[in-house]
Length: 468
Image 1 (cartoon, rainbow, N blue to C red):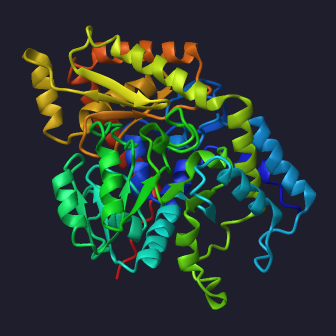
Image 2: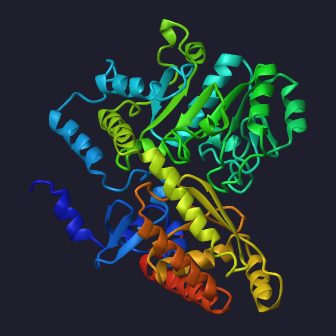
Image 3: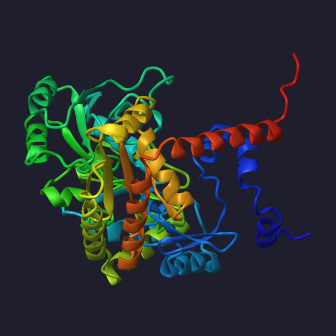
């Protein structure tokens, strides 16, 4: 019988969480069930998702920034299908594929002149790993500097420059380096003065908190790097390709980084792809001789489907003026949320650049609302905003999520195609949820009920351990 992927999906639809629980990550399944996120989505388009019942959801996460130009973008979809239909030889490895050269050319045309060399890989954390390795090769130094609160990835090298301890637990020794508080130039200067640091890595606008750097701080960081022979790496994985309203976030601050790491939006939402761009002399320090032409490589990094998706995505960004749209819709969203602050003391602020937005909550001043905040916040710093996220989905069919840290922040990374009506949908839903949120223990009961259901489903679905 011939393989039919369409029939397979139709036959097994609805088994999503059971399969993941059995074969992939049951802990993640428990979390989704506990917070009521165990939905089965059947399709996506633009800024929306649909479930099997035909209900439409507003996607304010966009796959954490992957679906920047909208889900199922027809231009990207057609490019990927066309490449499959062309039967191009893919991943020959012992060749220089045309599409990889074309995408590299297109990227270099969209970066400052000094960033003239491109390395392709598959994910944001791989782009960061490449950045770290290339920085070591170019400088002959071993250490790195990162800023507290930054997010750079979860592979071992990237984890070494993560701006916090939550994700490092249990993974042993990491790469040597120093963590600096954002804004603490004196500490940074002391560290760089040792002149043993290969690079400083920074998110110009941290994707999880969207806390803007102090005015002039990033320019001072760049100046210190230049003074002490340290490279500057800008992590643009979350912020690249229009997320902040410019092609890259570093443009907002007039920086000239030595290396940038990018991914997410370049995929068009279809095929994993990442690109690290750097100065040619840095690139040449890695591939320094003919016998070193393979010293850093990725089997899938230059595959034709990924390159086609990247080329099509850049075309959409240009043809549909997506950078301007991201800036405009992001401002509307932030303004709409902040207009609710007079009605909801718990809403501290919304802040953002383009379609990268954080909603930060705060402790109310007194009474039952303060007691509710204190009771929930004492359990975990991100639990109170999770009690906002849950009813946004269950009552209003709006998909959001907390930051994954201890901050009381809800993060938004909607597709740039989000409409004015979508923004009104979100703001109205948030208004209603914040009106109800202090009526504890209602939200806590919902979470508890979901947790019990998750545990019961787990008992039914998991095999009993085999006796020794």
